[in-house]
Each structure stands twice: as C-alpha cells, then as structure tokens.
Image 1 (tube, rainbow, N blue to C red):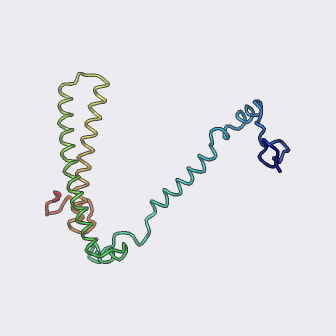
Image 2: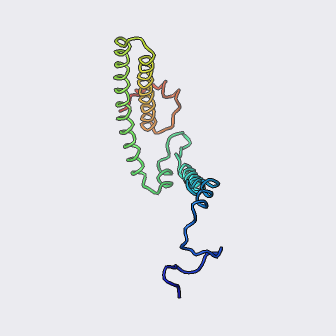
Length: 181
C-alpha cells in the first residue's frame, strides 16, 4: 500500500516520482535540449504526417479521370461508371460547371476592366514617386491577371460546351463564339 503523498512505484533511477527536478537540472535540460521545450521533434513528425496526407490527397486514382471516345469527345457513360453515378448526373454536373465557369468569366472580365480603368486613372493623377510607381504597377498586374483568368474560364466553358478537351489553339481559332454562354 502506498504511503500518503506518493503516487505509486519509484522511478527507474530510484527517486521519488513526486520529486520535482532541481533548478539546475531544468536549466541544463533546457540549455542542452531545447527540443524538450519547443517540441521540434513533434513538429517534424507532424510535418511529415501532413506531407504524406497532402500527397495522398493530390494522388488521383487512375480510374477517376476524363474518359474520351475515339472521336475525342468526353465519354459520359464511362465517366459515369468510374464515378459511380448515372450519365444524367454527369451531364448535370457538366452543365453546372458550365454555368459556374461562365459566371466566373464574366466577373473576372468586369473586374479586370474596372482595374484597368482605375489603373489609367491612377497613372494620370498620381505624382511621380517610387511608392506610387509600385502601386500603379501592382494595380496593372492585378487587372491583367483578372483578364487572363477571364480568358481561361471562357476556355473552360468552351471545353464543357463542346464536350471535348480542345487545345488552346483550337479555342482561339474556333469559328463558334468562345464567349461563355
């Protein structure tokens, strides 16, 4: 039976388990091994674990991809089988993606045009200075980036509308309108 104030068996070094380490021992442990305080070993272990999880998330199973017919269009039936859904659900998902891509393309286009108009205004009224130059270049970069995003969302919409993964050159040289609808 344990005496009052003791928690049980003695530690392996023969000391009382309730006895606190002395100030010098704590200081030595902290000075020699900051891992005990900062937990760098645990951080490394968790970082490896998160990295492994991230690589598992990014790995796409081989059966989950776009399937194409010999003509080069999307094979809706094969894709539906791969995802465990009906072909109608796949068509619905593609139609929803088309609507989302069209909306995003319009939003990016309007945002890009507004940013370019704001950029032109800032170029005309800003005094010359390094800070203003940096700000004006930043607004220009954002405007151009939004216009590029608008263009690529329009290409995504075109691919879903034609139901084939066309190339960038085909998208540019199509006789059909590539404006999202």
